[in-house]
Length: 157
Length: 73
Image (tube, rainbow over all chains, first blue to last red; front, side, top):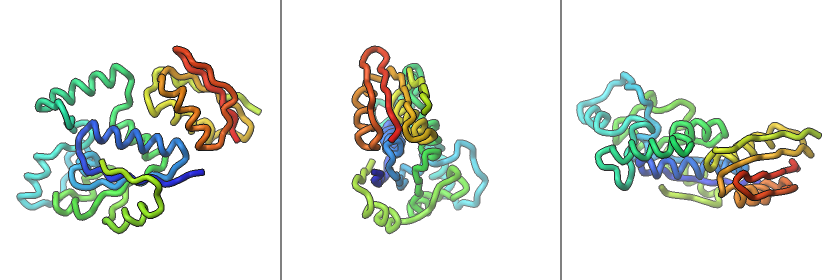
């Protein structure tokens, strides 16, 4: 019956993130266990929209300001045009009744999709646990590989 | 045995199969779940979903509104 799927989300692009979460919720609806491992730019997808007060050094602060804070702020991988493309895409998707990325993420979590944030990337990019959405795990590559060993599909997005 | 109706019209992928999954999860073995969807992909998706999850596809009608009848295993 149920298999396991793992998805590495490396990209922080809106379109790619949506693809990842559609596959994840779809797999969960097929009865599969799904683990998503967020690393590098993918971590931005998990950031809370609101600024969280945490201690950071200068570079970490700059990094934090330059990177998008959460699913509503992501750009497109193609035709972004400084965010205009992403706005247009969001508008069209809303008109066509496609779930927003935020909704997809909530659905995925409600369906038991496991979300893991890469602690090494968090450290490099100066992202603290408090800045990321609730209900997620924090781990490294060994955890991902352990999950991947048991899975019959592993994607890198 | 109950018959549960799911209105998944105007939901985009993966909305309809998520709705179906949730309905099947919260129903009893032998229950019939009727899903109405407008996403064209659902016609093929519901077949794949039933094959994978082992629930029985009792009937499937194509059209502007796709109607699938599924019996929970």
